[in-house]
Length: 450
Image (cartoon, rainbow, N blue to C red; front, side):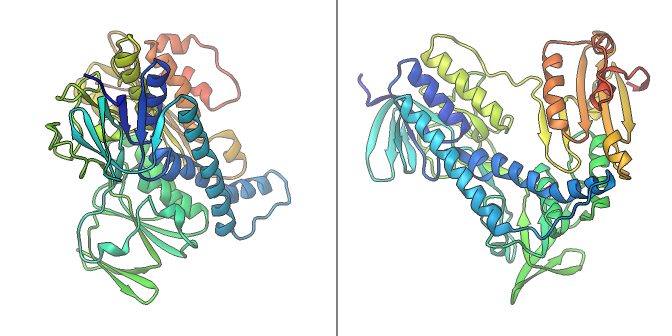
């Protein structure tokens, strides 16, 4: 049977474009459809613009620190309009690079929505139906906002980069990394930030690390309230009046909901094609990213495995090599490091101390201290570094870092952990002094064991 394409990719995010490009270099005839903008959540409305906002939000702290080091320095008001114009221009530039990469690889790009019409058919928004030997679903995820009275008045992480102006007072609802990152960003930009969540913040991360982060967020001026549930939001002129289940009422200029994300599978035709979906709408796949329909695959956040851009890229690459490159390799989801760009920053890889306690047979090493740079400037900020070690194999099973540039450090640690490094090999590594990172190779005293 002949097909219009060997591969049709639905979704132009990180995983989709990598899979399309690599499959094309393996000789496949490839098409890709994206209904919004090339680059997906990470580049257009996620990691990249968020990190640029992180950089912007740290400027006031840097100026304050500069004064402590003897500089005559001051920072004026933040120009959101000017920043946003530069941000938009940068995203346009990056999107053009993504598009050029597809075109250079010979991928046919459709700038419209596509849905699955069958195991070997894709229907485009213009009514065209094309045939394809393989289909790859890479449609990512979207922010979730629960249904309640007045939910139409809130914005999500999708809209925050398009604000016309910065609010004076904002309520951020949620306790995950997205909510906490935007609390820190907006607080750094001079917005009065209040954060509500129904449970403790950063749940699921190592508790000792998250407690330190939350304490420092509060010390930095973020008004944090846990065990709070919003019952309704009403618009009163320019204000949003927020009423909570415990009776509290407050007013804000804006409300941002960051209460999780769900896979983007609504209306894609997957169930009609026989593809099995999970309870949250995620596409169920095996280690090869293959669904129960042999010709249909899925990668990235739409599968709800590990929702990180580098993971989606690796999944897409592994899929293309396996199906089109005669190099079968499954996606590797072991020891994936990640960073949370709060202030302070958090880098993590491997198991938490809570998981170590459940497993048993583990030792915990911890170092907590005032870093030299901010300590000299009079800051009370602290750094935390933690290693979790298997008592039998002596392998480092977990590493958690709360510190400036923790994301940069955890990337390096993850290499050693992936290679199976032991605590003794960490200890045998000579320290680089004076640095924060030297603590990772000088921790000798076990503080807890399970």
